[in-house]
Image (cartoon, rainbow, N blue to C red):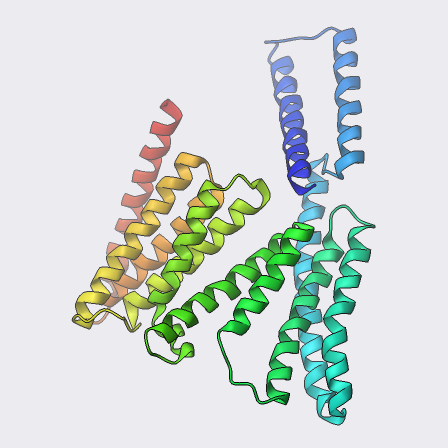
Length: 348
């Protein structure tokens, strides 16, 4: 359903662009349709748009797309607010309940959330409320394992992140919800990191300090998102992969510890240049594949890496006015390079 809806939305966008271009051509008297041709064309387009809107609930106008974006933002913020409310409610009243009542609530709460998702998904096509309920359901499942672990004195383990990630991924693929897929990928990345750290003989939370354990997950997500044919999920895999990898390289290039038995200064330098290179590679790949999200993410982290490196290299000893002049000059050089790249793309 989401793949078909995305295709329908793209078709409606092309129709709207066609109408705007046709209006420009008629205004410039390059192509002028007769009254009969214009009426037949408008009738066909209106009928097609109405059919697509009825079948897939697509946004026909620009204002509708803006409203839909606002609905997505409200849905995300509402989900976060509800999750926070659920957590605070448990924190406030949990100690007043008897242990059997606590266990019953922990078991029943995610099941109620699942029932709510199924009920909502059958009555809406946009799945905004379903996504909102899904975030709350995942939060309830997370609290379920945490509190049950405390009640029965179970030692913390990275395997909890595997359970949380698998649960969120199951919901994401069942209802085709990208928000839940992102939550799932984060949980699975933490699980891979913790498992790798334990295999190396460390305590699993130390994986947050040695960010190399996240690079494997990052590469796997980017590769899968690049090769996958899932139109509605592949971009989410790529975005989560790039963000995970870039943040890991940023941590390793600044103050992060490493599994490598080498001089820490050399290791940091290697990861610093690896971060710049990977960000540049993301920009190149995004341009080649026309992936705007990849281009924007790569450009953002390339800028972050560059600023961090300039501050690290020059800030302490260089006059501040000279530092900002050089930074502005580098920005101008990068802008010229991007303009040249854009011109080459237009020529090809």
